Image 1 (cartoon, rainbow, N blue to C red):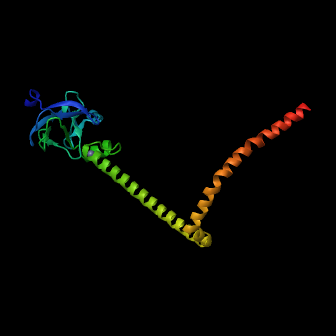
Image 2 (image 1 turned 90 degrees about the vertical axis):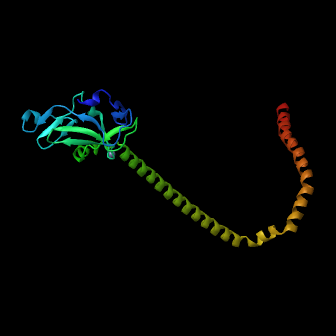
Image 3 (image 1 turned 90 degrees about the horizontal axis):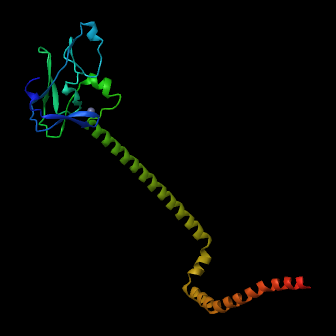
Length: 230
Ligand SMILES: [Zn+2]
């Protein structure tokens, strides 16, 4: 490993998908960040061809880097569809360097595009969890929620309109049926007279009722007692 080992601008940390590589200081655009390294596998070698893991980095038709070794810190770099770094492949030297394609701020996760093959095989089935795809999913969810709410409000509005129409129809029908009575009731003078009458006779009637009630309740009891006594 070249110069990067002494003053690493990155650290391994927790990311959305497990572990990831994060910038510990500002990494300028175009800077080499880390080398992706491991044993070279030759496709012409039958034994090599049988090796299969998630960290294989194909350089060309013949050579592949087996990056599964723990010393290969670059293997912690996660995939992103809108990355801030790229894998710079030198086919002739059979070397892969991860390089910043944007200026990366301290604390920011470093990532590069793993390529369509990896995406199709490993990420598409489970859903890519990179920032870009998460945002896209969140936007879609928000849009779906908004659409659902819009439809709900529309349905409620329609139902309210229908109910209002039905109510108006009913009042119209009821109005036609009771027009003479309603007209009488609406007569303010008549209503006032009726009220005055009720107020005038109301009180005595009530007291009369309360007086007669206990009497009528006692009477049967007294009668039964009298019956028992005889
Ligand atoms: Zn993605």
